[in-house]
Length: 388
Image 1 (cartoon, rainbow, N blue to C red):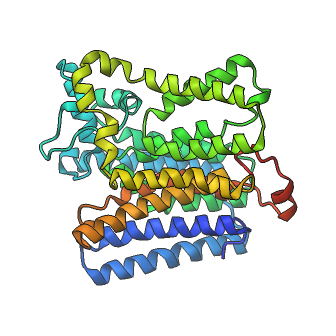
Image 2 (cartoon, rainbow, N blue to C red):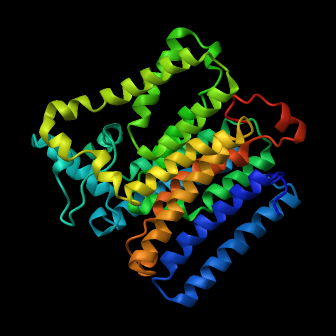
């Protein structure tokens, strides 16, 4: 085991989840060649990565930041080449297409959420998601969102106060993640959205010590960021429960923060309502995404569980770790549900979208990056912090 970064159970579990996610991607796409190739590729991937990390950890090998800079630059060049070789029209993943038809509709004066692709799919993400993608729509290459996500990861890791050896191990994990290359090739946007949210989320601490302007600016900005993907309701609920149990700030003040957050979120929908209020009631992200992964009643169960788990655990729960587990559980439920209803072809070809697992990726990295803590830290740490 890679003892340098896996010194507690949470890190081990996070690493296992990372391995499972990458293995699913390797197996699914190598299965397109043959079943034996899929088995061999999956086994080889796990052995190769584990062996490399173990050797680096054992011999305390590290690679300088300048080398990593060149490697990430090389991935950028590789991505640009891929954009030329593989046109978006040949890609079955339709996130780029949803962005395209959304903004094409806006430019034509058509209510965008009521427009669908030739396959019958409607735009599902929330307004700010499309606003963030607009510059990339203008340059006609959504793939640059994936490149930007990779560089955000680079600077996110580079600016952490960790040893060179640990820095090397984390970068190896990133560059060996098949999900990174999937994002680039398919012009996916999940990693970009997830990193943006995590960077905001990690700054939600010490609210009581913040100035009034920063306090409410965080709430306003949070509502805007939340208006990208509705799955981020999970970490927001967990964080809110943590704040309530820790009594870091008064309940009234926290309620004001939440109201400001929700108002900011609601305001992002005003342009759509003004565009066509009647169509908004028929076509909006809540209706479109309500049944996209799993039936809405099942989603409600997960939301209830998100509230109940902190109540059961009280103060002793880790927001980032629990978010990772719930994200992984929800997407796994979606995959299993699709397989049970459609068959194994749902996983191997179409029906079960394993790309949603990428939402877990930045949170897994955050778990692996944290400083190891002993039993005393578990018992006496600041419960209001996301790092507990």
